[in-house]
Image 1: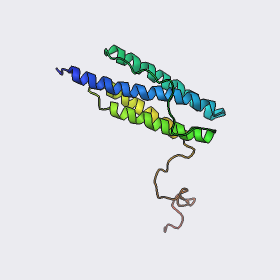
Image 2: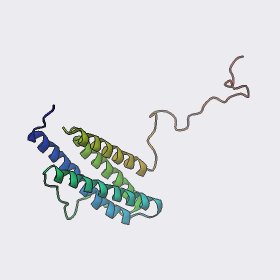
Image 3: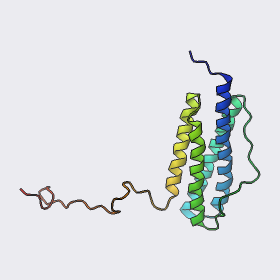
Image 4: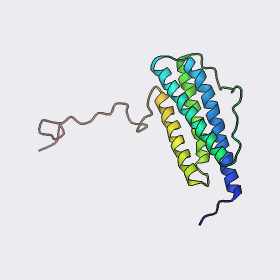
Length: 164
């Protein structure tokens, strides 16, 4: 039987509070970002906002259930730059999601396996959202040409130029 000491519980609760603080910041920022966008980008911003709100609520509930005091949101958050247009809003959303993922990365080291699993899934969601906001997907094989050409197949199914 594994006994979790209160020190481990306190350390996990501190990590949960940090993740909660990141979620508070995300909820604030996405409210602003959605107002700076339209169309499909705004829909993705709104979906991210709702996702962060739900995650924030789950964290608050978990911290309270563990006997901790949830971090409260700030009235306002300093942004690294003002998103004056949709392009800058998307750039800020990517930065924001990377910051949320970093907060969950610390939580992945929690003592409680359920907390670790939840943190890993939340981190995965943040990273996935960051990639969906990027205008161009990352290169699968950096250094390779953008449009790799494959050998043309002959009617027989063998590559063109293959001896036979």
